[in-house]
Amino acid sequence: QVQLVESGGGLVQAGGSLRVSCAASGSIHSRIAMGWYRQAPGKQRELVADITSDGSTNYADSVKGRFTISRDNAKNTVSLQMNSLKPEDTAVYYCAAGWGLRVGVRANYWGQGTQVTVSS
Image 1 (cartoon, rainbow, N blue to C red):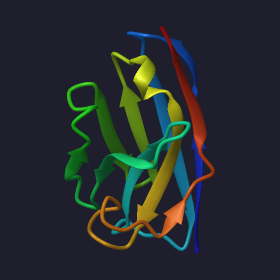
Image 2 (cartoon, rainbow, N blue to C red; image 1 turned 180 degrees about the vertical axis):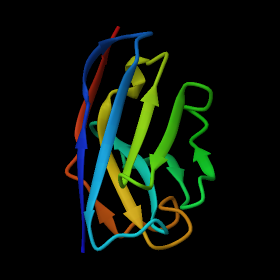
Image 3 (tube, rainbow, N blue to C red; image 1 turned 90 degrees about the vertical axis):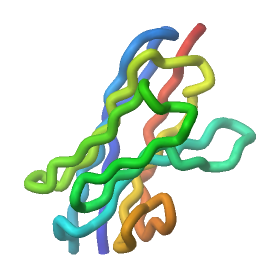
Image 4 (cartoon, helix red, strand yellow; image 1 turned 120 degrees about the vertical axis):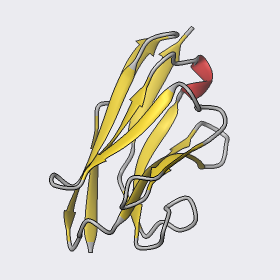
């Protein structure tokens, strides 16, 4: 079993930056894929970005050029640096992990979520 704990959400003005991080623990190793999803009120959960075990990244079109995902295999963490934030980025952000190539295809584990609110 894998446990995921997010941190770093909060309130920021449009155009600002936030960084959310996720620490993984339990039965993990560096081959696990990780990523971030988000869910805004009244909308479906959507993939924001994911990163494979060897560091290959994938981003939703809506965040390309603004968000950067990274991971530290030694610390079992994944982070999402969010710049130029927009009100439409407001959502609960969930850390995800999985044993497939990408969590964008299949996620086996989820964090509890962290709220990101962008004011206009």
